[in-house]
Length: 272
Image 1 (cartoon, helix red, strand yellow):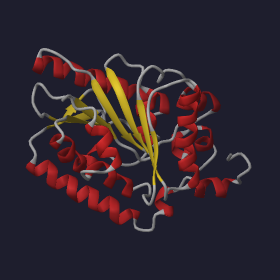
Image 2 (spheres, helix red, strand yellow):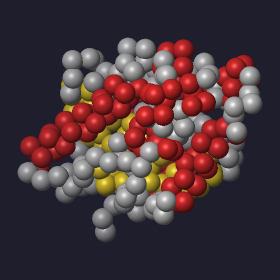
Image 3 (cartoon, rainbow, N blue to C red):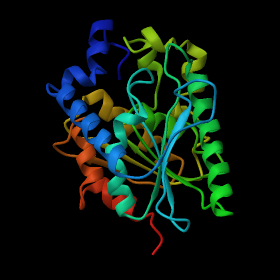
Image 4 (cartoon, rainbow, N blue to C red):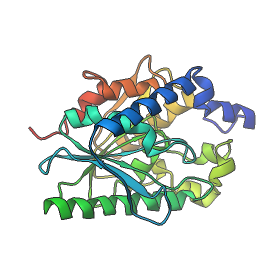
């Protein structure tokens, strides 16, 4: 439980960058690796689906018969960019996926409702593009990290979504409403409850696999554990794995490295 915590304690409980001493170095490495990928891997970059510059996506095709993985980035709905995560594209393409990196507006320029809407509109735009190119559409597998995992869980009800993989996500927004993250996110009680997957049912009926690092902040771990229990109580499909030794940032190693727990889970989605 978090309600007994003072404001400064709750701030610390959700400050992932403070909890990981070398987080800035890790993110810098991501950005450098991502820039290199954009230079050497052919893709359709910055296709807009709205008037804001962040309402865009990058698409890397593995062929017209490939499954499609859409990645939604994190950053507590107010930081980071899809461009910071292009480094995950080659490992996913090696598995046989076409990959879309979906951008969205950030707080305080957009509310949580508008951000979720961006994801929905963006997915529909990517579907339209795929149908135009292929003449058919296989559906989307969604992948999200941190706030991106929340956004994945928030749009699982879309008809064009097959399943989801959520890494180190936030599924109950009430503690977020009471900590520093809300300075820009500006949640009120209604928007918090309306956008908390842990009390919603719109993600029911589809498989959602959950991962969190065993070296993450305890309240971040609790978010995943509690969401998993909620889904289990309602007989929903999906695994929940705590990956020992991995923090909020190094957990990406389990996605991009062959043999990693998340890599294995994602690989199972490729038709054989």
